[in-house]
Image (cartoon, rainbow, N blue to C red; front, side, top):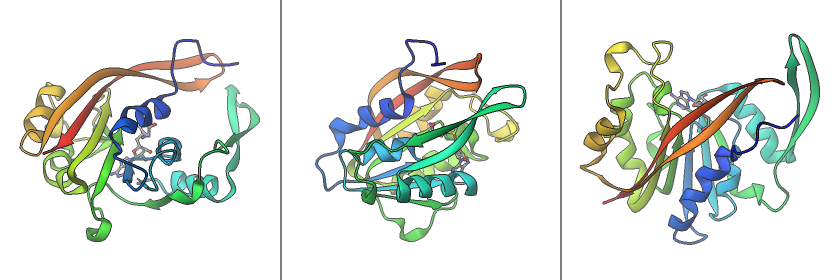
Length: 215
Ligand SMILES: C[S@@+](CC[C@H](N)C(=O)[O-])C[C@H]1O[C@@H](n2cnc3c(N)ncnc32)[C@H](O)[C@@H]1O
């Protein structure tokens, strides 16, 4: 059973927002909080180097299998304990050699990572213990001069990930305040996504997508 109509492919939508900003095939892109790499592979349609980084060892293992073999088998929950086998495949037109994955923490990235023409941080900031530090101190160095940054977030602040003292109150206003010294806002829109719990249960969420250019 397919998800309800009207919901676009979220990772693809993120890559499409960045595509006109790539500045050519030789660009480098970083997908922070890449999960199993769906957006990373989409970015590889139009840039030659994509680095995907995620905190989760199991996500990076799955992303690496997709990179090497182009497919992964897993079981999809139908209801209760019932599952069915499915196969996820990287679209064959995507050059998987352009993409590499590594386990890492967005708050403690290796110093030698360099900077990127495109940086995607999709639905990451409300999973971080210190989003303010990430936005104001770490992100600016990751984006090359005139490069672009796409942030998406539903701003679902929870103490599971972020101590209450670090939650933003008006998240968009806080983003503007923290990023303004280094970036200018060039686009903003709603970006819906759907999380599937089981065959008949989906969670609809509206992320705030903001596209920034490094000054
Ligand atoms: C809500 S998911 C978003 C996944 C994907 N970007 C998307 O939009 O579909 C958040 C991802 O961030 C990863 N993550 C959480 N904390 C992180 C950190 N400190 N550094 C890097 N990745 C992190 C999680 O493992 C998870 O894959």
